Image (cartoon, rainbow, N blue to C red):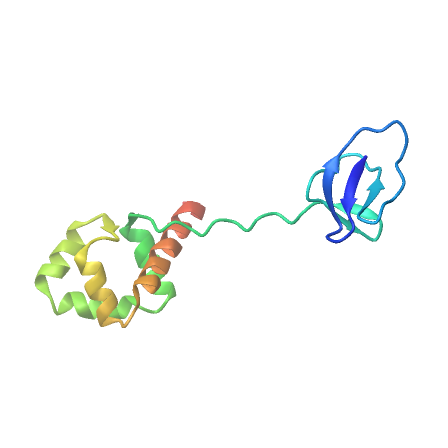
Length: 138
């Protein structure tokens, strides 16, 4: 049996009684198997509270260059990266030598600045690239 607060229409206690108590000014009582604390009374039926929202995605420290390229292509930014790399020998050599791209790499922030991307935009790029890798079926 569940004690329902009339003001909030939420279960505040689950109790065992030999018989159903009478409703009071503050509480009413409902018998329904499986309900629990914080369930709500909706049209005479107890319903569970909504699930909490999922946590925000974590920005990966690094992504495989292949998946970053895939995401850059999808966002239409790969041509810009090519132009930037062609104009800077050191950056191009580092890009070509790497298999993974670290979010903390200063060249990543340099590219973001040239693209007028915010740090949040770049985090989103890394999150999207990691999601591509996680769902890849190669």
